[in-house]
Image (cartoon, rainbow over the protein chains, first blue to last red):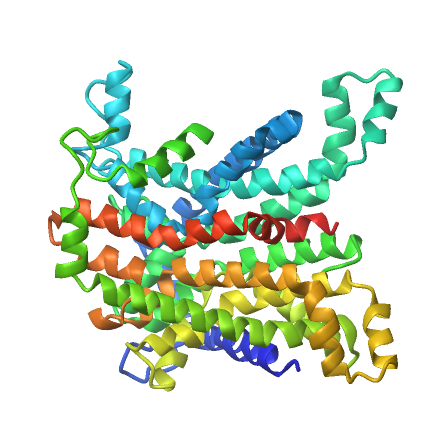
Length: 280
Length: 251
């Protein structure tokens, strides 16, 4: 009964992961066998300015996007919880950016960031904020803003909905007790809500950190890593080097830089879940 | 944020309108271009095939797997359960390089089947994990009484447990389908022949030729691609929310 699951988990996830580990130690190219080069790929990457740029981009992208999603998501969840059932329609609509695959919605964003016809610039002009128009994807700083914006737009519903479920599972009595003890709304948020929400907050942040650092679609569709490689992440750079550039060993080494993030996140996740005594 | 999300989705439906409304009447020419002069219909069919087959594989693997993890005891159970959970955390982008080797070794490069083989890597762990949690929440007595009444274990699973677990299975189906429908990196990496492309890749790679962007057709394509998912979402909103919050509500 566990055959198929085992096959997928061990054959198609664990085995490729290990083979990536081995490949990263070779100079394999597509169509050529490749020989063992030890840590050569990793060393070469540390001298590769584009890779170092990607490393910095990934750190910036992940930290900023996850932080915004966590804070805004919590705020949104609190607002939705306060509105209760009146916000049912809002809740349904809120999920749309997350439900529709980002590979499709990013196409719409691409159009909205278009230098000539950008709807966003049109609106900014219409309300008199910005006359010249923002060169969304052409300028390296704005391009970073744009990809983070889309990542937040996409991920926020996930954060808000999960946080909302967490908020609603906190028993009323806790708040009543806090109120009797003379706690104001801010105090009960800090003393009751936050501590009780900590496991959920941490789990969502950890999961999102892994998925954000491993992002591909948004970058590939909107910028392909440009301008000046300022938006490259591990996956997009690995795709460029490993598949388009056929240096598959080097590509494997690039994606493996994400591995430590995964290990740390998995470890912390397991610890939290184990404390909750259940992970499956 | 809510405003932006609303606007964007409306934007998807506001085809050739520059910028927020349709000024010069509605046109279907983009859809015509899409349907008549691009392989769009083929991509749509490919996407359907890949998503449906992936979903079937996922359910076939996840239901018995989750049942075994939740209910039976066998050597390596803890390890498998842990592996499923960790597999859920592995992002697809970490695997595309080595999976390219696996696909090549299987002789599936540039074929739709490459996707059917690799998509379960992101649907199966999640589905198994979700269903395991779901099955653990169903009282054991239910199937034990069925077994006392003379039903075999498999029969008890099929006729007693599965009907109760139906919402979990529906969630798994929705998620697998949606994930497979929108997935991009494997599709981009393993398939480059036009006739074997799936929707997101086809739209991105073939409706942009050099500097010529077929924006109208591209947006029309995005609308058509989003429709099946929106339809599913409209019908089974609870399933989506259940899947989304599966990890959180258990704590």
